[in-house]
Image 1 (cartoon, helix red, strand yellow):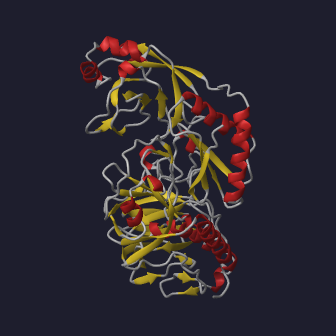
Image 2: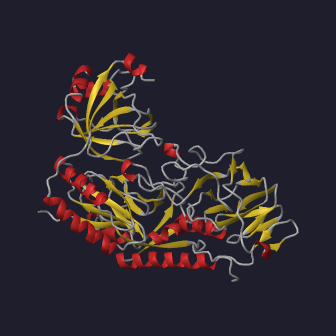
Length: 328
Length: 225
């Protein structure tokens, strides 16, 4: 069983939940930008949560199922069509052989995740299938997906309850049940929860006030490594050279020019810029679904509230996992 | 005794910072702490990243921040009471300092008002400590460069620095493992692979290693293929 990429769209790549245990050698954690959506897509297909999924940014991708198979699409940034029929997100789908799925623009979200029943047969590099293009490792030969790439499945997935799918005239099967979208659709101004960063105290008082009261726009110069923000500039109280130390996803660092950058999934392991804030880890999936041009506002919270929000998200995922296949 | 600062950089990553300075003694403490953390890992431990003066540990939702903080605090007290013998490997790295590969060698020589031979002699005159691996996979941050070799970074970073390039900036020297944009001054190139995901470990160098550069001719460089 396999699918073939007809059009790769923008920066489509294979990702899992990250490459762990090699950060001391400078290897980023990487993995899906929105790990909640990637996890849900796998849960719906009955896969292990860490199976490789295709991450697609915004719209434009199309691919063909070479055999009939189960799949699920979770996330945002596009609508999916088979012929003229729109395919729903967050549900188990049965796709007939030789069907082409194409993705068109939608106003909400930024990244969609395709999981297939049984998972893609992708070689793990350093313990992960995640594509990290700067080092050319993981996924499809270390690069983003291209036209003509054929992705085979590990095995055929036998799913209980498949017989209860609602069948459309074109042969597509859709589950009656669906998962809730844990990542909310994007409003005009996205509020993300943030905690004071390790160097917060080194910034001048205007900067300290602006970080939690000003709106920032996500720049078009944003990618899997980081989101550049446009808005108020930041400055240190006194100019100091920082000694490089570990950084990771969610860190808001400020360049010498005073511009903030939020580090995302492919963040480098070590950085030398002062860190004014860090995003609550539970809000990273929301940021991953926020596209360039959208305004964001940082709402200050403490360490404990941040930890509580992460626990709540993890409980929510467990609830959804146990509810898969149940009527909603 | 200085009590290290412990802070979160993520809900599942905590840094223990021994010093904001670059010093060999501090980095030895960091590496000792890394060994301590790795030899008695807590439940949910996902990895430890040494930097110049700090160690960062990653963990999953099997363990709470409070527990990790207490664990780090206890271990650091033990580490500071034990001798900090370095366990790093001694490694010799062949470098071709031909100006065709060390593309900034002439600029560095002119900037420091010395001959290119002097620059090579200075760079190979001492052993360097690998303080940490970062920037990109396999990139070693090494020091401390002889004062006579200190040069600023490039005003405008090069768009492409070839893999294997040996470069200097400030008090540091490093090796680019892959072709990337970069701002350090390139003075030579090694034929060795600094990062290879098919080998174990994937990085040729590790924090705590001691490196000596050995000059080789362009002919010898080409023979390495």
